[in-house]
Length: 270
Image 1 (cartoon, helix red, strand yellow):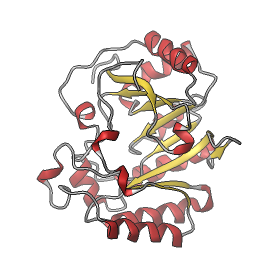
Image 2: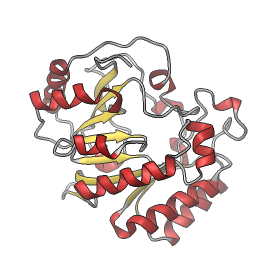
Image 3: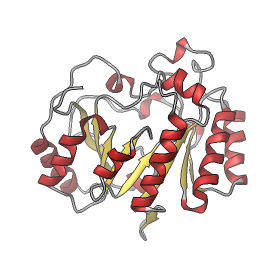
Image 4: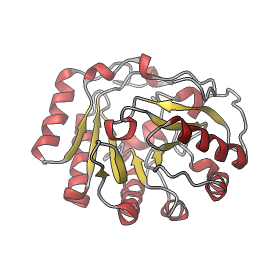
């Protein structure tokens, strides 16, 4: 990636978890690139595609935060920003919004990176994709994903702790962990929930996602060329309930491409 951030879209976003999107939307800044190389990424066009998106300076980013804040969004939501960390940090030195800052990440982060963001990020929104490192290597080119993501979560919890929500149901600070169920891999998902329960207990808030739709190079891999079944979803959801984990469960109807925004760097559109 270039030194100057490449940004695919800046706009209010209404398709995150209820405490993040609320009624006024989340002020999402979608950066291109990613710390992972997931073959099924729903944002494949911007995370691994070759399209050239606008280059945005720290000063412009700061101005965009102000515009989003003035539009009434609940938070500033940085989506896959780590590859541009120095400029992102600089943008908040120029302007720190009065609303919470969300760090939306695939979970594959160094502890040093997270510590560099301490005092900037209010809400950590990481994925925890894999309990099975064989799958992590095959699908995301991250053979040490489980260990790296677990240590990253420890640091996030050290900084912000359990997710706290205000009287209107909007997140104020803390950690909200996402997990996307992959077709044919319920064992992996059950393992993820076990890791979260064993390591973080009642402190963790989980967003269980059933929105998987084949994207990118998914069709090249066994199982990944289809959506998850109702049976697969219910098996993982039942385990979530049995573990008594707090959080949210996404309906299977969310597995629809219409929920993926267009990548047009249009800060006025939704």
